[in-house]
Amino acid sequence: MRTAAITPQSHLSKLSMCTKKIQIMQSLLLLFVLSMTNVAQAGGIALGATRVIYPQGSKQISLPVINSSATNVFLIQSWVANIDGIRSTDFILTPPLFVMQPKTENVLRIMYVGPTLPTDRESVFYLNSKAIPSVDKHKLASNTLQIATQSVIKLFIRPSDLPTSSIDAPAALRCHAEGSRLTITNSSPYYVSLVELYAGGKKLANTMVAPKGALTLNAPTGNVTYRAVNDFGATTPKFTCQTN
Image (tube, rainbow, N blue to C red; front, side, top):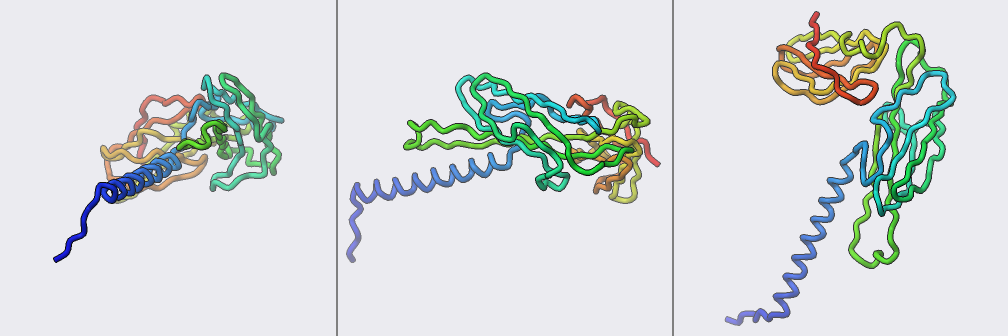
């Protein structure tokens, strides 16, 4: 019986191929994880707020954009999407595209130019800001991975002269449980963003209840507690949902 001889060269070649496959798999995994990440601050670029309140009827509002990196230059691209994630033509952002040098701050101006919105409740949109890092031409030949990061924050258009304050909105929620279904009703004219939502001792996913609307979730029966996010992005004290 003849056996094939294993030379040092063939062994090294197989080892090199194996190492390359592992490196490719690691790179693909890293790209997947990073593509699933949306944060308010990313790669040295931060927005000046975690949510935007746009007074209905205002000509425009401003939002600071800060580059805290001491070395990195970024290209910033911004736009507004509707609640379905589709880019909206109801807003003009200036500048929509600009370069940020290290340790600098710029101002993004947001103007609503769309149709008349309801005046008895808030409307919600999503402000998107993508930070694309510059590429050093001296590093183009090396194995350098450049990642564009994207921040998404809520943009609420708020009518004036609403009958209640946004501070009171979280306490206005009411709950109704029927079997494994929990319905949360919001009688206020404000969107209420819920965090640390528990039902029957089980933690539920963060969610948002529309003004003068209701949200139905799968949840175990039992006591319902939650915290909400206020206009400044801070978390409120814990509430116990009143049942009906």
